[in-house]
Length: 83
Image (cartoon, rainbow, N blue to C red; front, side, top):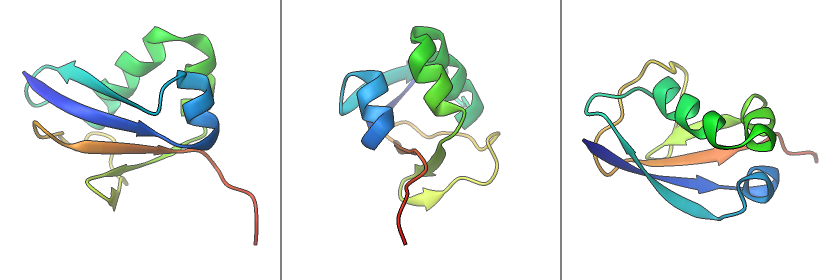
């Protein structure tokens, strides 16, 4: 079992209804598995997650099949406007 901390920002935080949450996953679970778990909890959050980018331990995720270690921190970042 691996426990990861998910931190939501901006629209993702509004959709999730929380700033952070701990999610228990099977050992060796990937970022994609985490996203499936998060999407299953709420339709609005699922829609927002489809547009987000992600950091794992402050490193941008390029491969959603990347494995998550126990204690990892996953940041959920919706698109930001500005310039």
